[in-house]
Amino acid sequence: MFASLGEALVDLIEHADGRYEPCLGGSVCNFTRAVARQGQAIRYLNPLSTDTFGARFVDRLRADGVDLGQAPRSPWPTSLAVVSLAPGGVPAYTFHRQHVADRDGTADEFIARLPAALRLIHTGGLALVPGDWPKVHTVLMAAQLRGAVVSVDANLRMAVVGDRPADQSAYRNAVQQALGMAQIVKLSDEDVAAMGWDPSALADVGQRLLSNPMTQLVAFTLGGDGAMLMTRQACVQLPVPAAVNVVDTVGAGDCFQAGLLAWLAAENLLMADALGELTSSDLEAALRHAMACAALNVQRKGCEPPSWEETRAWLCP
Image (cartoon, rainbow, N blue to C red; front, top):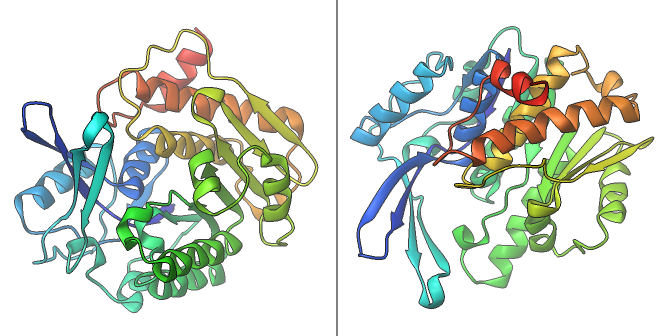
């Protein structure tokens, strides 16, 4: 069974007429829904709020087949990200993350919610901010002691820590530590730039990450330029699939990672030693499935991940 640890967040998106539209999301929550739709059993570890948004999250996650375990409902409100339109139509983010439901809990409480037959734990995004990282680190250590594979999606959101260089540096350091604990790491080209690395030299970045003995597989998502998978032995990059009519890119990276892990699980390759031995053919097949999962999602409004069957049918019409 999989487990996921991270934010369930509502984006309040400003429209041109001044209205704000609430959209349920958050990177880890989107991933959780996507991997469940890809046919993998998964437990979401974080509490959900007793407020209206929390009730909607409960309904949506359960509808997708996510196991909520014994996590109590939190009296704290649901996290919010207000997405406003700055001059020129550029989105500007303001995060409301103090005393919110998905941060309500101790490391021991999260560890107690881990499933008995734990195969993989996934985290990333806002769970890696400095204030939460020590707790997340403890949970990942406990999962590793049980033999679980660790997956981390960097998914940096620098706005959540503000403009102070010291706070941004602490955030990057926490992300770096998280990546160093994972067998499977994922970064977008924007993440690479936010970390202060060169997005035009991804092979070098990948090799730097793979120099850590823990890391076995590195995934890069490159927007309109496709995606790449790297191991110490092989590297495969593919362009965006043809005939993709993009409606909305929300959750694309989360669906990509869900598709990647679901394919590895289905092929019985989701073990540290097997990940290190992936061939170029394995990487290409995994990458095609992950990109198909993301491609189907971006052709729908909001994060609406495809099922495993939809993904396979789209790949093999």
